[in-house]
Every structure is written in C-alpha cells, then in structure tokens.
Length: 159
View 1 (cartoon, rainbow, N blue to C red):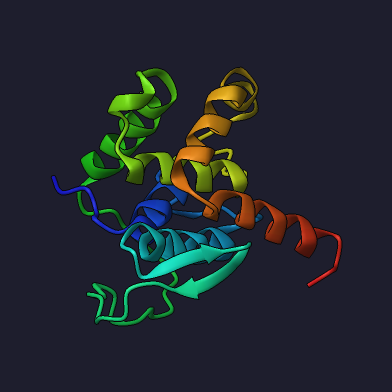
View 2: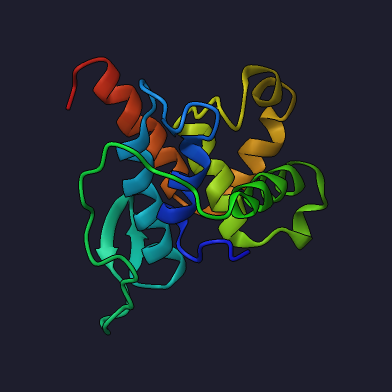
C-alpha cells in the first residue's frame, strides 16, 4: 500500500466514495484539488504569501507527478488500504499532539474542512474538532483560508 505523495492525489482519494464507486456530486472537488496543488507548491517553497497575494517563491523546476487529467466515467481504487491510511492520518491530525503532526496532513485537514468534504469530516466531527481544525489550518499556511473564501465567494456569485 502506498499513500499518494501529492496533496491533490490525497484529496481525490478521500473525496472518492467507495460505496458509490465515484466522487459524490455537490463536492467542492475542483476547488479542493486546486487548493491542494497550491498547498504543495507553498510547502515546497515554490509559492509564497506576500500580503495575501500568491507570489513565486523559489525559481527552480518542480517535479510534477501528474501528466494530465483524462475524463473517465468510472474510477476504481486499486488498493483501498491507501484511502484507509489517509483516513487514519486525518483522525491522527485531529486528535494527536500538534507537534507531531505532519504538515502535509495538517494541510490536508485544512483543505478538507474548507472544502466541506462531509464524506471525511461530517458535521459532528467538524463541530467537535472546530478548534483543532482551526489550529491545523493555521499550521498549514494560507491555503485553507483562501480556499474557504474562494468557495464562499463562488457560492454567492462573486467569482
């Protein structure tokens, strides 16, 4: 079992509903995937936050494991243990001491919470872990709040 390295891959895997065999309708998947890609760039130093604006950080080539997205009608997880491992990491990030949390896992929780992915963070978990999610969001940098603002703006038609 190999948990995907990139945050976009992790988000997609968690958004996939194994019971339905697809990503649920009504998710903010596109916005979460874009935010996850930005989070990877931010964590890698390729993107910085300058007074609330994205700016190029380090100017050197970055490895891109994704060669493109192809339309598909059916997705199958080859090894469901990878998704289970990611769910465990989300649970760990919500309950273990903050000092031991992998920054990628903190960013993942921030993105899932901002994207309101109820398949992973249901209402009960979101309410019970609200302070912890805010702490993980602060730890992960500006991506979570930016995604939250983007989704909110899109919902009210500002974009």
